[in-house]
Amino acid sequence: MLRYVYRRLASLLVTLFVASLVVFVVIEVVPGDPASYMLGMNAQPDTVAALRSELGLDQSKPARYFHWVTGMLQGDFGQSYTYRTPVADMVSDRLWISLPLALFALLLSIVIAFPAGIWAASRRGGLADTTVMGFTQLGIAIPNFWFAMLLVLFFAIKMRWFSAGGFAGWDEGFFAALKSLTLPAVALALPQAAILTRVMRSSLLDVLGEDFMRTARAKGLSQRQALLRHALRNALIPVLTIIGLQFSFLIAGAIIIENVFFLPGLGRLIFQSIAQRDLIVVESVVMLLVFAVVMVTFLVDLAYAWVDPRLRHRA
Image 1 (cartoon, helix red, strand yellow):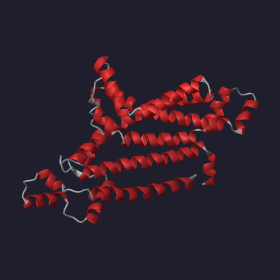
Image 2 (cartoon, rainbow, N blue to C red):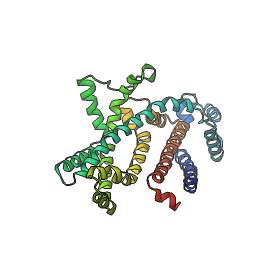
Image 3 (cartoon, rainbow, N blue to C red):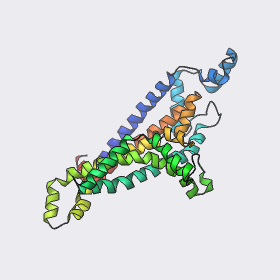
Image 4 (cartoon, rainbow, N blue to C red):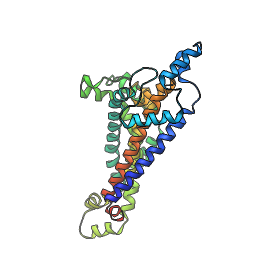
């Protein structure tokens, strides 16, 4: 088991190193000068040069990359060109919105998908199975931003149960903040729940045809007992993969939803920083999201070993 963990850790470190190079190179080749953008078209060359020196943009690219990486390892993400504040402070303020939103949406997705997938698999070919698969197809086909606007029109404008946008803040209380995240979380969770339901159903159907399931039924277990005790755990490996990918998407890919609901999260921060040519913010936030995705993948690999002992023995 330890060898398995060490191998995954080594893969994690190599991935982060390669990702940091790719992020730095891709953002550095973007045309345009942040200093010229900040000062405007009529700025004098000596003023632009002084600002470039102040921001460290006059250094060589290898030196800037080394300074950026070593700073992140020490918890220093640099200083925003636009707001002149530490990037770490900006990220921490917005992380307390994006991370709860991703967890809330993922929880909703699991709560919907697990019962629906199990129910559809246990009634394969029946009306319940057909109905569930029809709804999942609809959930995958509907764009989440369009669904988000429908939620705003019905629950915020017509029913007035929720606000149309913005974030109340955790200082206003847990339930007030959670209420602000409910509509965005539902909009994010719908397509993810549809995908997860289909994966759960397919994985369970594969397991239900195995010999050990017939043996369990022959020993006197009911279909429900055999499904919950034996089939569900063996069907979890592909489901865990999808859950890990979904969490990575929810924390890194909610830019559109955050803009629809005017949530000051990480996605909206990246969008604004790109528009303002604030490269250090874009680099640091993207690298932080890459780290989150890689860590989730690492934890999913560990969950594989916990669910399937064969992986531990092979390692």
